[in-house]
Length: 206
Image (cartoon, rainbow, N blue to C red; front, side):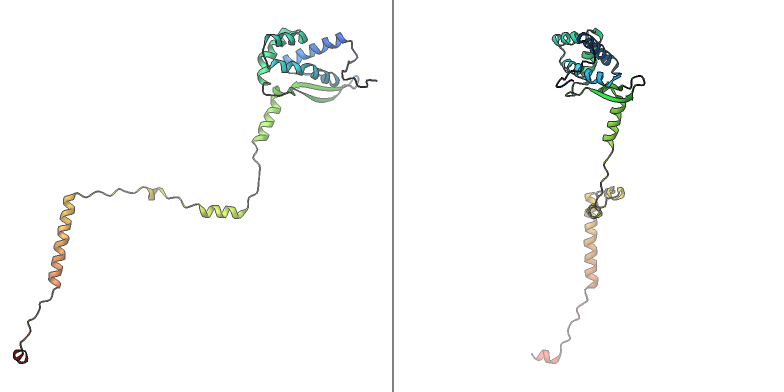
């Protein structure tokens, strides 16, 4: 019975188990996804994710520590050059396990373990899901108030007005003189001649 034992030995010796996990981790780093049994994938996740965290700090010490686990120069260079750039903003959870059913021979649970940042189909699906606008109902009264408050836009014809031509000072003076002459003529024509009063004998006596 495995009471309180966190490490799954996978039915192998310690050296065999370490070599297997090292090879699987190198394959995962180089190919970005591998197909294996569910038990091996769970053991691989605990083995490889601390190495991804180390790759965020590109130093000689971290490269040597990762190489002691992987024993593969190509996998180490791929991890520190390419993968570390994509996982720099991710605080853990670098891998994903997708179950694929049971194996025909021994009915073992099979799965695919992959790097989260390299599954382009799922990343594209998330982007499209975020881009969808939310549908919300609005009250009809608000729309009426908004339409009433908005003033009508002035047309282009109203905005564009022909500038009035400025009159010269001479013309203005001449027009004023003419107006004054017309006024004088009108007053002369309208005035009625005053008739002299006839002297009566009564007025003479006074």
